[in-house]
Image 1 (spheres, helix red, strand yellow):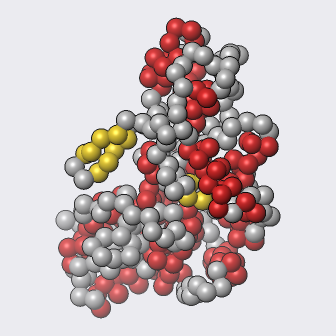
Image 2: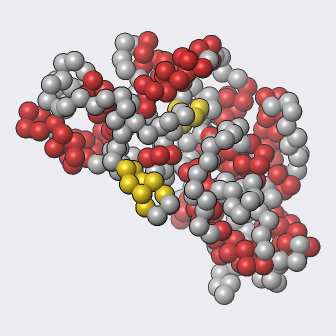
Amino acid sequence: MAFRGLPVPGNDETLSSWLFRCSVNPHVITTHRLQSTDRPVRWWDGLELKSADPDIDFSSVICRFGLDCAHINLETLEQFFAFRSGTLVEWKYRRFFCPDCLAEDVVKGQLPKWQKSWCTEQSSCCLIHGRILEALIDASHYSKAWDAFVQCCNTNPSRINMPLSVLSRFRSTTRAKIIQFINRLSVEERNIFVNIFNKLYSIFLQAPYKGGRGGAARIHFQSERGARFADPLSLEHSFIIGPSTADPSSRFGSMILAASLVGIVSESRYSMFVRVWELANPSSLLPRDLHLVAAFPHVDRIGYQVLKKYLGYVPKTFFPVLERHLLLQEKRYAREGVFDGYTFGILNID
Ligand SMILES: [Zn+2]
């Protein structure tokens, strides 16, 4: 019993979620109660509001529980709560959740739990239920799992336990295929694929910059309206923060685009995605042509160089679809008068 006298952590539960459950549990008396309005320490850093990170601050948990829970040590906490896959987003962006998972916790007679798999740049759909993650309006409190459950109950109770849609199933199977593909690669190949995939993923999720609408995946797939974040500091910064600030629907769209360009998702599967997407979003006008949907952002001459440098080296022969795509983008940039004669994917571009 690693946590005797305390609630048992969920399989994929975050540390802050477990802390909140511990603190409101009537049988736990070794820690002061967290109110549902409590949130981590916050401070202004320039124009940005930063938060302490209670999901990875293991040592402060030891202090919080004190000597009465001396059996809890750093190793145990890390073993249960450390993030092991994906790129973790900042606390304020950990705001997407699966209503079905929360409802299942409650059905089991437990407080809802916030999950680690919802907290990364790659999080778009629930790994168990396949449904797209939803956004919590105010995710700044320790009680965010409970807040999210309440939000679901108050907004649309019928959505909980709704049957899997075709799009949800497609998301689950596609994600599984991508993981299978990556796992079959050698370490060297995997590094090459993952590097290019991540670069494309963040370009398609570019945060809106200088009045633009952001990357291609946001333009075509964004479902969340009204969420606003601090403006990017530069074009490169708009790529870097893109995945953190994008909604799950855009993230999944970007995953499909990037995976199609690097050859992980086949042409026929991409076509299937377009049909399934249109079925679920009858009013959307999604071009059939992958190369049109995955257009790189509009940039000026300097922006073209920044974009080229950000994408970095693309090894020849690995990515035939991507090579064609880069050629098409170069032609477009040439028409727009920003192409500097140096092609994408070449090392030592300076
Ligand atoms: Zn779920």
